[in-house]
Length: 149
Image (cartoon, rainbow, N blue to C red):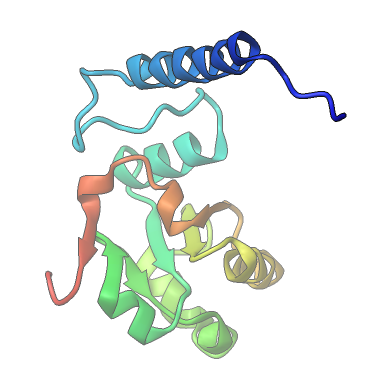
């Protein structure tokens, strides 16, 4: 004969699951809207990137492919694919108003933006912040989709 839990034990387990799901559902902040920033810690790379762009006028550089950029991008970003970056460094310096001005790079996952940061720092850019992934931008309403300009 196999040991099977009694009906009350099974019911109790499901009760725990129900309570856990209810707690998760209630934890959602009802004040948060799409215009609210995602929570970011002061000094986090996401916060540093956002502040550099929106408060300090840093260049926001999207290093994904042109096709990726056209389908979804952060409002105000410039697109130079990472594979073209080495040949377009003078253009980046012009867009940033010099190699001493801050540049924030991002891509889809953080891999290409890390490469871009290395390239820019290697060329003498003094302040390069790697946001990482597009999804890390703290204001979802600033992410444009499709042909929106």
